[in-house]
Length: 419
Image (cartoon, rainbow, N blue to C red; front, side, top):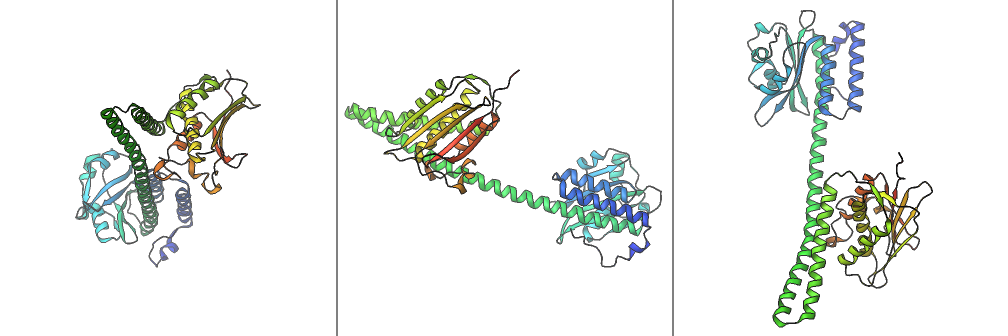
């Protein structure tokens, strides 16, 4: 951490040893806070509290600069009397107003022993919170030649004026605060850019996928209209089949979006896995046209019902099975849906396929939202939804290599809690 101080630091030689120790302790605490506190508001309040104590001031404030309006506004206000919150809500100062405005405008520190003798003093904030300022130090916050704001400490507790040492100490604290604010703003700006990029990527992926579904709907409608006009009922049945499959896919995507976007507390109940698997298989064949893909179910290792949210687990398993079907060959593709009860009483469910598998470098990414290896044929939501459902159940979802070299998605559900 670099403090932007004057080259002349001879003021240290005139500071009593106990004051130097107090200043050093305060700076150590501030340095610790900078490394451990991630909330900017709390960090600034703690920095100002330390500065107020080191300067032995009755009150302090931190004002930030709004470059659009060219005004200062109160971000932190601490004092022994008055409604400090009123300052944050009511007052904004032009750079031509007050001693704080002068410090910001000139970008230089100002030490005023008696504010009544200084024509720059602005009494309106004092009047609003019933506080009387006698003396003050105002120090600008500057980072890389950019004005960020102003720090003020008000009224030396012993009734005297602030010393030159007090001014230099507050310059150190202003440097720390300026660095904290600048870093926080940079992080926030980067996060905003990342969020916008992620949203753009998600919208693009969903748009391409839904466009394919809409094309399927349009084709089926045109096919059905033509078959009705020509009374070709065999063609009509084929168009109707395409229409049903497309509408089910649209409903599936919407349900995935809702499942991912909303936090949900699972409605636990004892569930027979045989019934759950039947629902998954029925929906699977309605969603896909992969009649040549073989789907096998193995529940021989299940010795007890699983305690879960049936509708949620159904959705999670359906996404895994559909994902596996998309990965395997349409000529000899095979998907296995297995489940067994573990010795600890928990349940393991696994979806295996004989496709190419998931490369190790992609196993973490495939569970992230909107990441898809299918191009415009996928939304990148299915696996993320399944992972969310499993986590809501207190379980784990792992991506592995199956015994046949394809992909295995394994769900570990915890044992049911007993009263």
